[in-house]
Structures are given as structure tokens and as C-alpha cells.
Image (cartoon, rainbow, N blue to C red; front, side, top):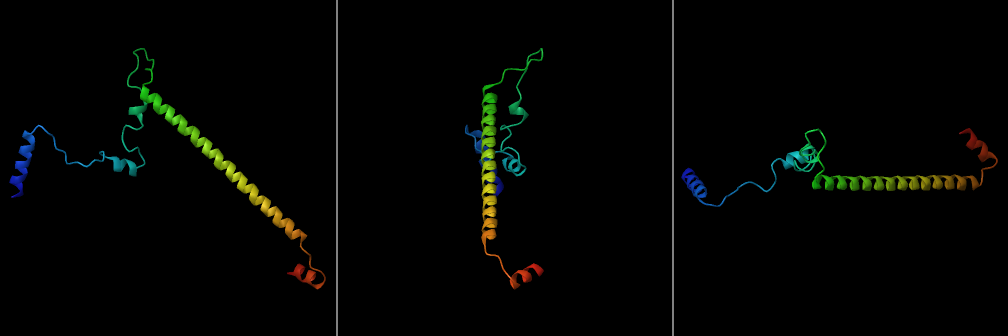
Length: 128
């Protein structure tokens, strides 16, 4: 019974002017690309988007397209931001190390100011 209904629906859709799609909204292969560490679509980066579409016959490269210029600028600003944030992290680590070193020095200085044992306590501590 399911076969006649299916053929009826398919023939009705074929005759109509509208198209019907039963695929999901996710682009083909997007999940696979993300799982393998690639871009979510094939047009985000790679040779198809980064290289020029054509070149002159004598070998000169074609002038860059607007999209290529935009992507290059976005990459440069991202690289500058990464460098800036990395330097901030380095400064933070240095400050933390200085603080730890200062705390260690203060602890040693505080221990050096403490009263020292005398007499029998001095000899017991030096033996053990």
C-alpha cells in the first residue's frame, strides 16, 4: 500500500512547478569536516578561495579580488590580535613569577629573623 501512495506523491510533485526538498539544512559533509579539523564548508579557505581564478598569458598574476583582499586583511588582524594576546599572557606569567619569587624571598627573610635554638636544642637539631 505504501508503494502506490509514494508513486502518487512523486508523480504529483514532478508535475507541479514547485520543488520539494527533504534534505536537512546542514551542508553536505559539514559534520565530517568539523570532526576532522577542517573548515565547516569548502569555501572558507583553501586553494579554491585563496588562489587567483586566472593569470595573464605572460605569467603575471591577476590582481587580487575583493574577497581575497578582505580575507587577507581578516587574517592579518587575527594574527595581530593573537600576537597581542600572547604578549599579554607572557607579561602576566612574568608578573606571577616575580610575585612568587618575592613571596619566597620574604618567607626566607622572615625565617632568618626568627629566634635561633640555643644549647641542647641546637645540638639535637644539627644531629638529625
